[in-house]
Image 1 (cartoon, helix red, strand yellow):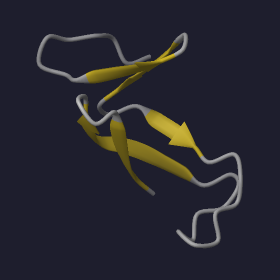
Image 2: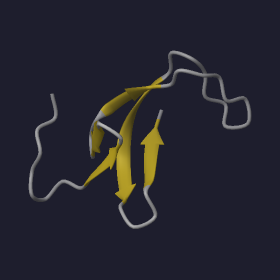
Image 3: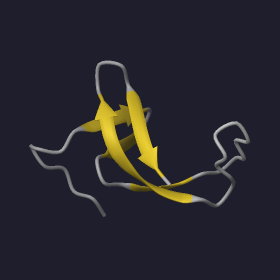
Image 4: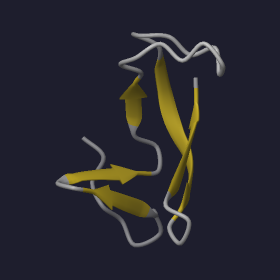
Length: 57
């Protein structure tokens, strides 16, 4: 749904590729971060070297 582009960073984990702007869904409750099962968010930043995704819910 979110095709690759030269100006869009991406990060691969196993066989899954995450791209800037991808929509994601939380699958487990994380009470410390106040994110719960079923919450939907968008990938807003990708740090390739650190392999960190930033998601805004």
